[in-house]
Length: 460
Image (cartoon, rainbow, N blue to C red; front, side, top):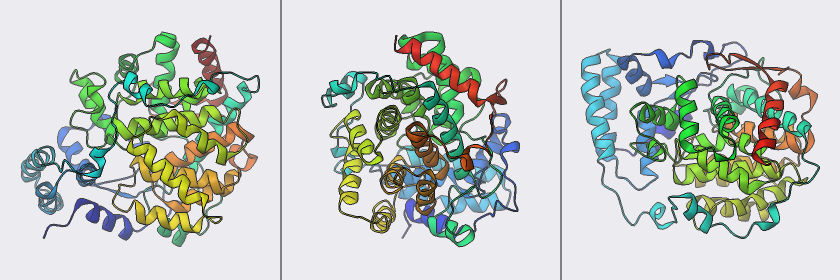
């Protein structure tokens, strides 16, 4: 009997031997996927390693896993995976091309169980529909004087510190991380600010700077085409769609098995910094950005992350923060149900141990980059971290999963709320490195000033 994709991916993740970044460099400097030929790209999608941590990846396998979580029967596609990997090992590229074509055909023609729980939840398909499922949030509309440019700077530093902390350990289980590094409470190696998360925030900033409050999803997509040479998972699919002339929102849905993954959730903090103390405006911006590459839970995750960030300007209690932000995502959706379920679990547990065990079992079938388990990790870190960045990051390392994206969100929120401790800020300095041509090295202080300036135009 063919094993399910999530079982194969789980086995790969749990058996992965962690690459010790204290003695092995990252591969970000070799990340030139935008220049790869078709065969090289195909091979990379069958087998690669996460640039920052060296964790194993098989994106084609993970595509089937993701579609399983949406109710598709991917057994026919999954049966071809061992054959494709054998062809890859034997360097039989012609056979691998044939198998890849049949794999993708089976992947996207798989039958779907119409009674699958995923399909029983609300899935609003436009901003008007989304707005209709939001509770009354009129009390969120003021902009208190407390929201400051210094908070925005601390938000950026906290996000980049969290990303640098997590990029060296992402893609592994919490137990694997602990086996090598123990209780991780600092950078495990000299921090790097380069990753594939922040480049989308820079594109959104430029779109908002050019178009103001009238910015559209197509405007944001244009900046992706103009600036971003390469993406991964949902963003990679979206970029291929955009280059083929498929514009938002279809760019986020067409043949995109990763549409519920973390991509918007990992990059929506800039929306909160553009709308400090205005969580609904932050959520609106995240929606416009999100539908370029995602749909449904992937987009709602961005709205929640944006609201968390916006509310951090005026909220001192991380526990209250995760509760209040729930009102900024459409109710009746599966994403809102996951957030409510997590709040219920945490409300009955004084220690994080029980919720951590619940996270591992409850989301066992979900990919490590999926939005659901990762937002739960963020919520656990904020709930039990008591506002302490080091403790919160330690909890995220125990969760495993997409640690750099999660620590980026948590670091941004806590940086805005209370600043960034010098032990996390000083190693970062004032330099953000990216793979965007013309933006290879940016001043973080200048970036924060630009964010505040664009924010003032948006909110004027």
